[in-house]
Structures are given as C-alpha cells and as structure tokens.
Length: 273
Image (cartoon, rainbow, N blue to C red; front, side):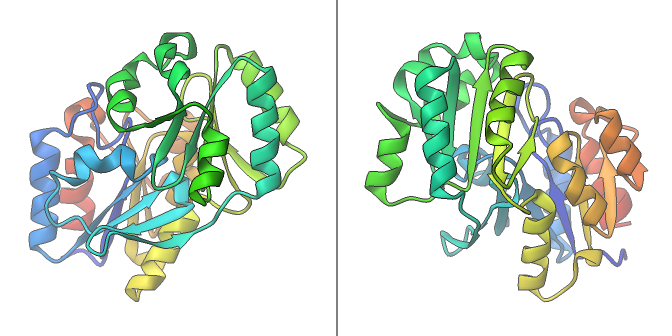
C-alpha cells in the first residue's frame, strides 16, 4: 500500500466536474480510500458554508482546508481548529474599494457573506456558473462589512470580483501595499488571503495536527491557488485540465480531467496504489 496517509483535493476544476458535481467514480474512490484508513480532505478556496452541499454527501469526511488555507475546520466537532484572519486595516480598505469601484465582495468566515443586490448582478461579474450555489448558501446582507463587525467574525479570505481583468489589476495594485497573498481563481476574481497563508500552509498545519508530516500527503489541483500546496506536498498532482503553471510545478500530471474523474485516478494510483 502507498506510503501516503492523506490526499487533499481541490474542488472547482478538480473534484467537481464542469457541472459542479462529484462524479460517481470520484465518490467511489473516496469511499474506498476511507475504507482503507486514508484521509481525504477538501482543500479549497471556498468557505465552510459553500461546501455544505458536498460535505453532507461525502460520508467519512472529517476535515476541510478552506478559504485557501486560512481556515481548517473539523466537521465532526463542527468547529474551526485553525484560522488566520485578515487584518482589520485591510478589511477597511476593501470596504473603501467596494464603495467607490464596480466590484462584488464576498467576505469568507465560516459563512460566505455577500451583498443582497450583488447577487442579482452575477452575470456582470462572470459568476453565473455559481448562481445556484451563492443564492442557496450565501448570507445575504445589506452591508457585508457591517455584518461581519456586528457578528464579531474574522474574515479569513476576501473574494473580490470584477467585470474585467483590467479592473482586477487596479484593485490588486491598491492592496499591494499590504502584506497579503493574492490569487486568481476565476476569470476576473481576486482572492485575498493573509500574509504567508496558502493551501499549502493550511494542509501542512492539518498534517502536523494529525501527527505526520506534509511529506505523507498528496495534493491535487488545477489552478493558481493550488500551486503552493502541490509544491509543498509529498506528491503534487496536476489535473489534465490544470493551467500550465500547475503542470510545471507538479510531480505528476493526470491523464484525466475534472469531467473524466481525474481525482479517482489520483486516489487509485497514488493514495491506494
């Protein structure tokens, strides 16, 4: 049996197909991994709330590395066991940007907090593919920043959506004076995470928490925000549909893409093989 104890699976473009579903082949491979005592972890830019649809159907799933590594969540205890919050001064600056620019902001705590009126304008921000998800799981409020303060919640990631890539670069330039991590996960989105926080650091924290090193973990992904985890893990795996940067850093590139159960291939070949 493989030396690896855990596999981290990105969601969009990796475990999920283009219809945002888990294929039967992927689900069967996950169940097989659990039956053999392996850990399967969702390693994603999504918040806990945005994962409920999937955590409810993946029986045996214990941990989430979410908000791009800034939060680790224990599903059995239903509690956050690690969190790296974004500084308040950054939250305040993003609030200013939201007031003066054509952007949509989602603050991610354990919730995904969105402005009500923005959810009526998803096409403008190229987010129609997430329309059903956001309308079902987002916490819809009049002011995302005031809501977060009133609830005493700390945001572990901010997603800022734009109508064009050029607008995204303007936002990034404004925020670049702060010590932050920036990722491009969608066509015109800017993911903002705390300094020195990536999916790789989140996965490393979880492995240490479970009593083994990151060298005993596999990570599978397709996008820019997966690069550090793929580079850090004992085995870094790129989906067939991954961007070139991911394929270049990965130890192996799968034969199959997200629409052809690439994660099942990774689990069978490298976690269980």
